[in-house]
Length: 192
Image (cartoon, rainbow, N blue to C red; front, side):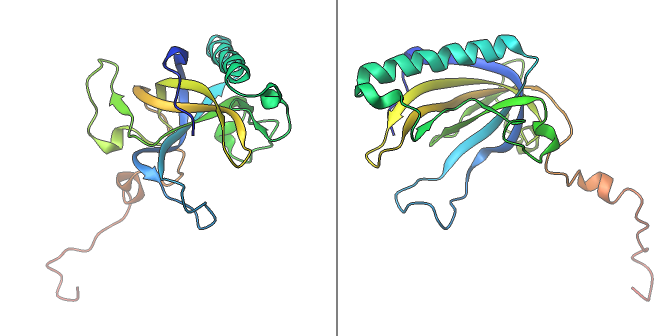
C-alpha cells in the first residue's frame, strides 16, 4: 500500500460510525491474502444533506486522483479495476437502515487512531466509541497501486473525535435495558 500523502489530510464530519473497529483491528477473513494485516477502521456514513462535508471529501479525492496520474502511468485512472472511495449506500441497495440517505467511505489504518472527545481530551472508556456514535475524523486521501494490479484512491484513518451519542447500530442494546424487567429470584431461596 502506498504511503498516505500528508498534504491531502482533511477533517470530515460529523458522520455516523458503522462497523467501528477503533479499539481493536478488524479480524481477518479466511479468504484474505496471507500477507494482509489486521486494520483498524470505520465506515463513515455521511448524510447526503451534508453537502459541505461531501464537497470537501470530493475535492480531496480529486487531488488524490491528480497525484495518482502524476505518480503512476497514464492509464492509472481508468475505470477498469479502479476503486473509488466515496460510494452511495442507496445505489448499492444496502439493506442496513442506517445507510439510507447516506454516502460512505471506509477509512482504515494499521495503527490505532487517536481518540478524543469534544474537549480534545483522550477517550479511554471503550464504551464511548461504538457503531452508531457520531464522529469527526481526520483522514488522509491518497492514490495507490498494488503489484497485483489493484489501484484506486484510499482513505486512511488518522484520528477521531466523538461528536455525540446515538442508538448503537449493533441492535443488541445495553445490558441494563435487556434485564430491566427481569425479576430475579432471591439468593436466600432454598430452592435456588
